[in-house]
Image 1 (cartoon, rainbow, N blue to C red):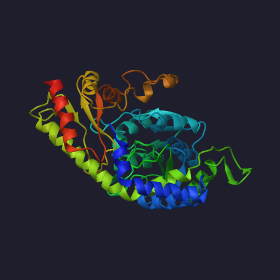
Image 2 (image 1 turned 180 degrees about the vertical axis):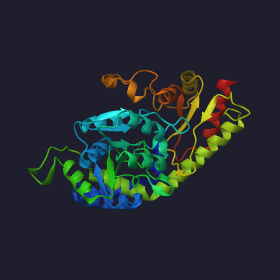
Image 3 (image 1 turned 90 degrees about the vertical axis):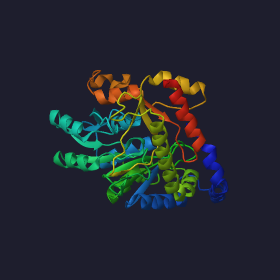
Image 4 (image 1 turned 30 degrees about the horizontal axis):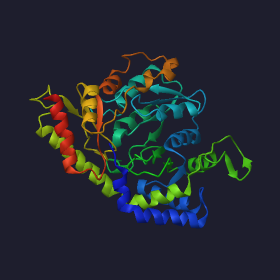
Length: 376
């Protein structure tokens, strides 16, 4: 699925030099390295500020807590995402409300959001779009809904660093946006790390306090926060990688195009004349600059295909096998099987194929040849 050693080999000396710089400084938590990273990452996202934190999951919580989301509130979001999307809402004291996804992109469907809001709008304070697999949600439609119902927009941009909607970067499309630098991400640290971007200086200041136990001045605590400070070594590694991000994302886009062509050439993908083909491609919207954190298809006999690929040494993954509204821990919310059919259908059919900037053409051909063999 992912070979991190290839990326590391290309930047090894830069990374080791940056880590040595931190070791020589003996400043390992926050400090000048983190300040520099925050400034550079805000510039990358076109925002006034960025606040480094310990993980993307913490970033979502920080954004909501600083925006005033609290007990008694609800936040509407997608059920087809990583667990942290919903758990962060609970950490803020609020209740997650799920709307269905667009079957063409698997992103949150603004139409479904609107329907859900008309059923129970009273205490819903915010909407959290997830830019799934590296493609931004239809922000034009979502912004219209958010404006009508007076909702805050807090982006889960964990998978979307470098993605844009109509030329505007993910991270600058709402009040605040959380990013993850987990080692599998397009921009990745050497461990857990995250950040939140915002144009609001009050929210940025509040997040900096919350990430450090609710303290603006050491040993003086205005509120209960958390220990979510960014390590200087992670900031230094990210600063080395940021200048390479666009070329890495471009390489992912190129490889996504190769997959599209190979799958079509093998007669595997659905078209008007071949609607019974076993592989369905997700739609890439023309307004969105997709950075392909994952290359995901929808397939027949998904689990059998995955086992077949594994036997042939081809990695794959299911993002995500159980939609959030059907997770055992959220049973108390009262959602039933069949209530969000598009998310449930996606969970039964999606498969992520190997995707990283250094993926080689012959490896992609082997993946597609293996899929073709399974369906032959």
